[in-house]
Length: 481
Image 1 (cartoon, rainbow, N blue to C red):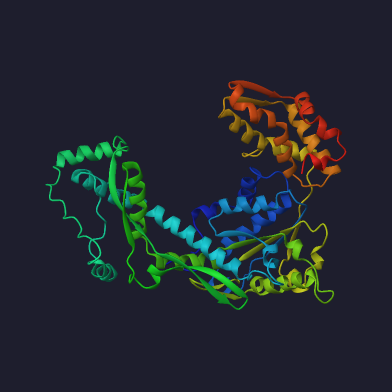
Image 2 (cartoon, rainbow, N blue to C red; image 1 turned 180 degrees about the vertical axis):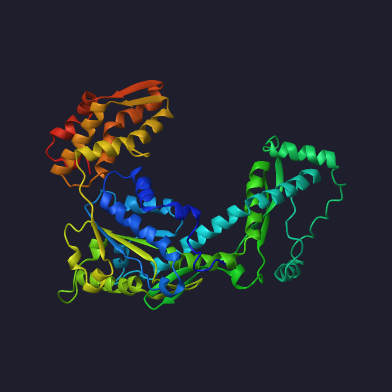
């Protein structure tokens, strides 16, 4: 197991300087420089903290961030891209989900449990990737044995566990005896080498083999906590230490599918889940990030008896100990939240950050305002990011043999109309571009398979014709939500 000093660090993370983090975010998000810089500094401080001496490291707490800005300006996108950029567990939750049931709603501790689950999945995937080559070798050997025996892959277990033996005794009078082991002579060395060559070359991928697939027994049990009922998945196989054997069933699949299934099966056997969970809990504690969206929806103080304000303040007081630093019980053990980085976001158009309770305000010392997007930013959003809408629609229609060409004046006209609709209707930021593009390309998308191959040029005149009714109509919301 990694020590606390090593948790959440690595060469890739060390290379992510604040400037590089901002540069990576610039590939997908237009503008919002202050927000990117604050997030980059916060992430870099996580790496710096891991290199401190033990006597001061625990005293350095993360500086939580509150991002303020209208909808559709990139707050959630920053969180999504961070999840793919840093080697740290990250989850995104909506603050409103904790007000859906009763006054408080779902237990706020659930966000920490979700973070630990994400950390376990991340560490497990890394461990599986580390033993993948060994698992592939074992899986290849089992498939070669199966092909030599006529297409049946035996289970990889060398012997029976206590649970397997008990199950066999209990089922001995209900099931037929297993078929005797094959007694064919092993394939000669030269033949096996040739068979291996053909297998690795993919020449046998379509051949059918019979394999045994292990299936763990999962059961979901209701767990009553102090704040309500949470469902926690429990693997009875792990709980009872093999008392209940894993179910196995035979499947006839192609060699290609057999390799994939057996590689996963062998990799699972090679990793130590106890070490995985230990490292995952440590990584969640030391490098975890929780992104809380819609923070403005719970902003409000109790002003009277009853009403939604009670629920809002109740959620804030539920969040307070989590953000301040507390210990949350999970099925993997206790998890401390002292060094988890919290990034909150909200539009705050109907409320303001000062409507939060003072204790919670103090736990988000860094506040960043994201600016609204205009016509100029829309042009950049349509053209600059690696996943821009123009690139997406061009690639989609290319699968039908339809080539889309967006001219410069056409892109400018799309941006102008999107900005105009945002001014006269509800301002939903860059999300307006999605609805504009859908209406603009509705006819091409519908008839794409019938007119293929074709070349469609999207000019300013084309955009004006397709969106003329939208621009003229006073009730723009009828056409574009």
